[in-house]
Amino acid sequence: MAGQGGSFQMPPIVYVGDPGRLVVPLGREFAGVPATVIVNPEPGAAGTGAWPGGLEISRIELEPREDGARLLVDFRAYAPGTHALPDIEIASLSFKGLELHVASILEAGGQAMVLSGPLAPLAVPGSLGLVYAAVIGFVLLIAGGAFMGRWGLPGLRRLRARRKRRRTIRGAGKRLDRLREGLGEGGGGAAALDGLSSEFRTLLSFLSGVDCQSLVPREFAVVPALAEGYGPDFYGEIFRRCDTLRFSGGEPPRAEALELLERVRAFISLLEPAPYTTKRPRALEAQHEFDL
Image (cartoon, rainbow, N blue to C red; front, side, top):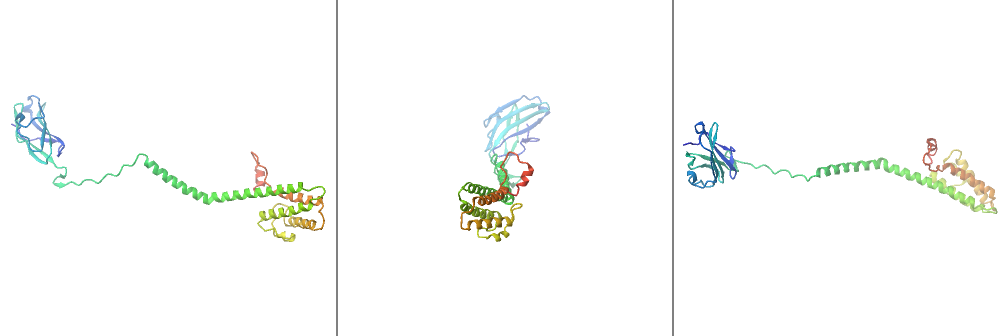
């Protein structure tokens, strides 16, 4: 009664194994046909005869519409190609010459289909943040190393040198104080002068960079002044008087030994940094900048 003319498939291309629907418009002359549905028709039901090999018909429906009626055939094919359906009879209507077109998933338009390449592996959640953190950490490490090499290490060396200078000066002052306290009323001047000469030579060698251990008094002209009013003349005079008193053949007078100790102690006091306080005036900091 009706053929294939004007029919179409949904979707337009049905691949092997996919469900599809054949839609056959019938026109306005069939507007009054009753709605009829045959679910899972067996071969031969409703005049269908036997289904072609590799083809399953799951539903046949006659659908009335305002603009006519449609025949709907739901199917699934397991073999590519064109499948001719046997005659279908439903609601006293007969449909002949219906065909189904099934495409192979390996072919399209007569040409072999090329599968797309594999997708890129999915990143683990949070891995991008770890990568950024590692890159930033590496950059900070390089920058920190450059900073330490350019400013940090020299600054640490200067700080260590200042602390060593401070400890040396304060240590020398404390040892001179002990020598002064050891001067008895009846003697001890020779021992005090021996200690003074040794301590003063060691301190001058450390502060000036000149080896003063073997210098005679007149050779102290090569030692630079380390404080205002205390230069080579002061050094030479101290050691000259020490040697004269030590090698005079008798016990040096306590008063002269005490005077030499006081003079050297006054010199060291100029080099000693001021005690630490919670807040120091800028003028005082500037005054002791060289000493620190």
